Length: 111
Length: 115
Image (cartoon, rainbow over all chains, first blue to last red; front, side):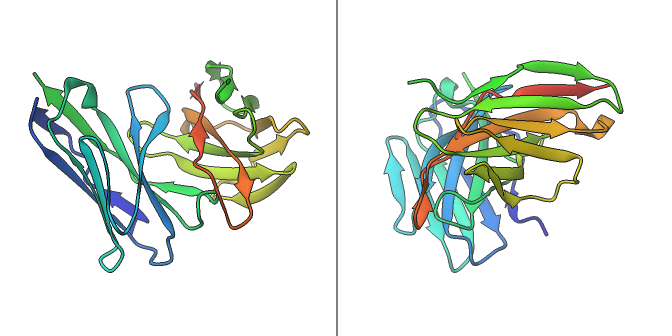
């Protein structure tokens, strides 16, 4: 079983729609969780950290369910510029140990 | 404030050759991690350097080695290149704090093609 599992997509979503991504992780001792965004042929960039209480940043909302070992990302009112690959990332330590990435979910926003 | 820089941006090698990739961390960062990203996959952790020593290592063979210099910059060396080593090699820097660290920031990567 992969340490971090994501649906690779692709997700093709009309502009303005709401889209949700899910991710599961296998190691219950994992401590910190992130969503990274990666544009084509570019480096991953941190989109947001994920907390048990849930967190929101503008149109983006992330949730963590430790009991189910499940992480989600919700994008509301999607924009063309949201087209990218979204990587679910898990860390055993509090930020500085190795990052374990999922394979990524590819999102394309259609005009 | 310069971010993470990597060189070269692209590289073409043949099987059996050796390659050295370089990374300069973001200003103020002291820890460098290296990742390999094959096409269509997420990045895979190779190793991490702090205080000029390898602090953690992923599931990569000994052909992959590294070094960190006193100015915190780092090199990744790969010997006896295989076709399967073709990938985007990403460097990430961070600042190691007691009890936890900051977010890792990625450089633009070096795209290696092995023929």
